[in-house]
Length: 251
Ligand code: ADP
Image (tube, rainbow, N blue to C red; front, top):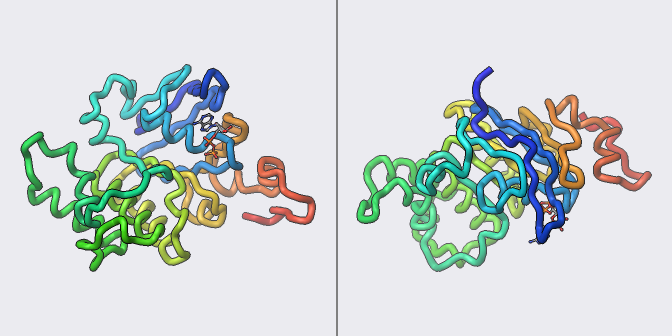
């Protein structure tokens, strides 16, 4: 079996000594789209941020391409790991193109400008995120969904081997929810990227996930192929649905 691109072993994290993640064991392989699901507060954002090195772990290990995450320099890490988080903040007044091109910064030296490869990566990401014609628009004048697509394009332009995306479909209308999921799927299939995304939309998870990881109370409640995970019994229990609602025949 090949080495996972991203792997967590007995990973734990805490806020002010209060555990938020406990004993997480997961692996995401190249060519695989893994989807994190779970109710609010189950630890999805914390897990993605800890895996991305943005939050400290309180125990366990994270390995990226078989090597401990904390052994990488920032630049080395950025060539392998791209992420999108919900709290990206209010955008500065960059143009769409400038914002997406920031995904290439770590590849350029202190004084290096864009080369042909950078320009091509940025152009491709713009097209893939449906942002043709938006290049010169200031990002602080975009709708929430348009800005979300800019952030996705920036992560894609980075050309990292692993992408971590926290609710990439949030704020997007139906067309772009599917378009972005298609884009992520293409990155796994054609470029061999490892992608881990959190989603609230179980319909998207069912359609696009190779693997689903279910979080509950900071632990992995289940993981496996969508047809094994998206059962009424598991979803009703984990999401604590009212009796009048049931996921009996979700898959
Ligand atoms: P999810 O993304 O699944 O909604 P989170 O990872 O945001 O879950 O939260 C997991 C747990 O950690 C929750 O109990 C939440 O209240 C807590 N938590 C999240 N962020 C913080 C924070 N900055 N400080 C303290 N507790 C936090």
